[in-house]
Length: 186
Image (cartoon, rainbow, N blue to C red; front, side, top):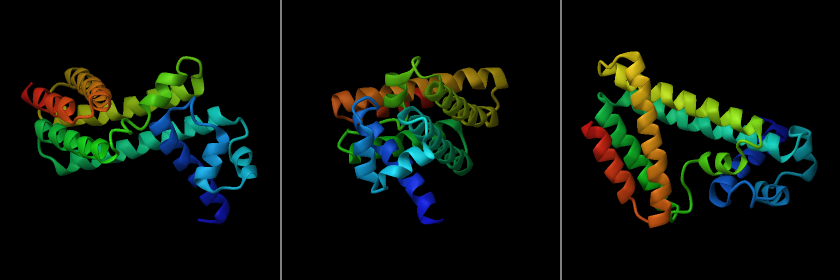
């Protein structure tokens, strides 16, 4: 990867980190540039539409990382309860390690920008749809009908996302542990 391409990836990675930690609105472009170490001109070269375009790409890429993680967990587990437990354990450890400063890599950005930004909203809908499809495939593997598996995957995702918020507020992994147990028991 050339230096120019690395600048683009550093800008996106920095935006993902800062948006997740501080929020979209509280993160300025100069802060993203400083955090990334990329030259100022690279920002508008790669993202001529500015922060919104960078935000949409950050949501797309962060969503893709979660999708890859979910797919790997699907392939390394043998049942939906095992999958849910493994994912929640991983998430809980990650959030705890961050000192409860981080949660879902796209939720904060989406909460602050949707419905004002269709571009960021579309990236978020695509990410959540992909996550739901992967989780649904785990339930289908366990014998659940496709429509029921999609509905159940939506419930799983909503419960996990809610637990991530509660974890940050309560400064405890207990909400996610409780959700993992409850979802695994269903």
